[in-house]
Image (cartoon, rainbow, N blue to C red; front, side, top):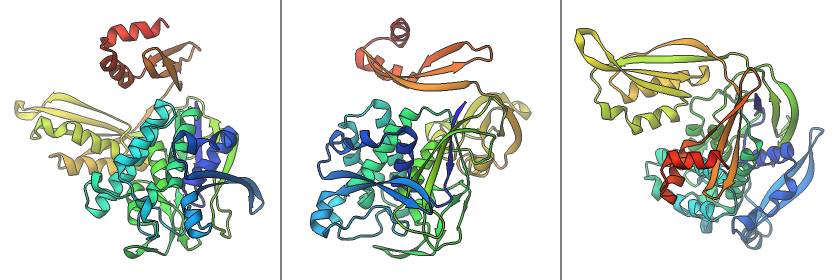
Length: 407
């Protein structure tokens, strides 16, 4: 099974992710035209060799030409002591965009449908965090620095490269977040900044030895999208790459990403269960299920059961990693009538699988392929893509699936 291994010993940011992904895929040249693909003529990408404590890597900087002309070359890219989350740099007023403006940029970009989906999901995470922190409806949030050219290019660039990477699973070490205070438009705030802290809920973190902000909202949102397992499995590393940050620390300010393989060994997880006989069915619908996903649930089922006294009820069963166990339990107890949950360790074995996008006369589809223990392969077309194309072309899903399987 092909896996991604993240080592955030010096924190996380959008440009660090982009730099390390470019290194893994040798994609430095192809991202140079990303501003053009996104119709962002004010953006320009500069790639320069750099060294961090003897580690040779390439620095990726997204330069906003408006900032250059107005600020004589000053740029506001991640410096590990300034938040991207809209709390600082008041003179960047011309970058204030709403989520709908950013979604429009993504929709009109010359990138694949899958890259667009990933980018939208990452921005949605940031929007939800900002909305909750400031108690403002998400559609009214001004994204400030997140809507600046560099952050948009960082996120969409990472989305495009993550699609190409085609990993089955992500593992991550605990995250160094730094400590101290950061100056913002709202005054001094603790590190990590509130929106960043929200995005990191349920993930293991530590402060580290050096003061300063080490994780930005962009970096945290990309990590949240990857939904990593915080464990140290036996990985056969095949390749590693480093994405440097802007600031200098005593320790090397880089993010290391590695690609490797993990054999189909059992995957240790937890099953969380509760029985409900006094919970209205509608309260277990999409709103609650979205809360479970946000809490890090890997999978869940809701089954009808007959409880004591002959009452009809539901058995809720949720699969979660050890690192997300507490947040999943809290999500159940906060959003249902349950007064307790039971949980126990379980193991599962997963077939080796890959995912790729395929362009057809009916649009672009994500195809998942798995390899059985005997070496045989079978594939499945993503159901969401089938439903979308069915609506667009007026063809029943069953007929559309048959046509695609015969291509």
